[in-house]
Length: 94
Image (cartoon, rainbow, N blue to C red):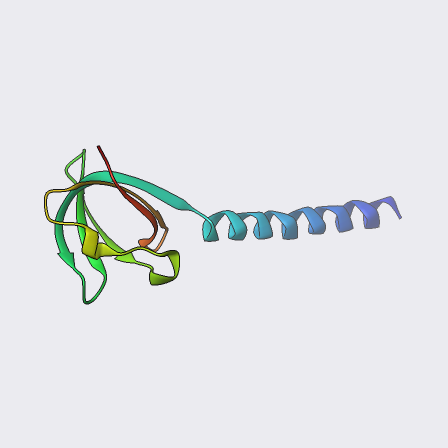
């Protein structure tokens, strides 16, 4: 009987660990600060070069109110995006 309860508890912990990992992965956000290298207003794509010199491709999310028309190449920006590179918030950094 005790073995049955221990087995059930282990299975429950196993399932909960998968749920926790899936939730964390889905909600993972990245914060990027860098210089705008290029902007394509029609497609909503922008390329940002971060302080380490890496180029990041980000896509504007119209549902989040992100409007790339306010930007120009060379602007310093601070963006928050999901793990797929979809911009959730965008500010011109000072």
